[in-house]
Image 1: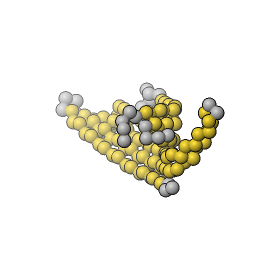
Image 2 (image 1 turned 90 degrees about the vertical axis):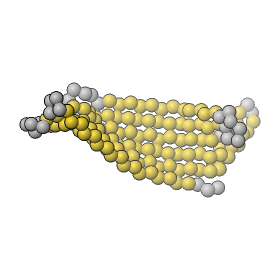
Image 3 (image 1 turned 180 degrees about the vertical axis):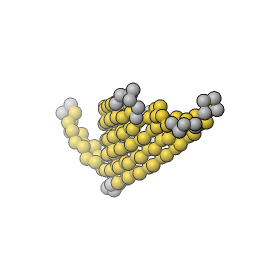
Image 4 (image 1 turned 30 degrees about the horizontal axis):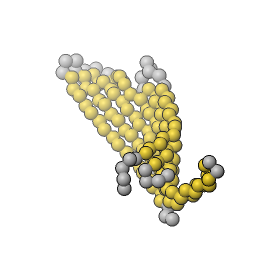
Length: 145
């Protein structure tokens, strides 16, 4: 039995500039994302239960994982003449997503997941948005190994 610990750290950054000659504006679209994740794999996870009076013992692989991400998006219009900078879009988003995977056999995988997203706008005419999803996912593969 060999267990496994994994970790992940990721930083993404992008910036796009567009120059408009009609109204002399420079549009800047900037995005930064930071993601941190961790996982733990247990090989030989023992699971015992009764089904129709039969005692069933399973000794399979279970994965625990959790990801956290933070993103900052902004669109700014820069007027070239008077030096006016106006935020036209943008938000700060964060997400947390823990999950548990259990491999029953080579064809059947069971996942329990939770995903929570929250967005904070940078302009006053938008609202804070929250999305949450959770559930149980059964994945059955018809391929032969």
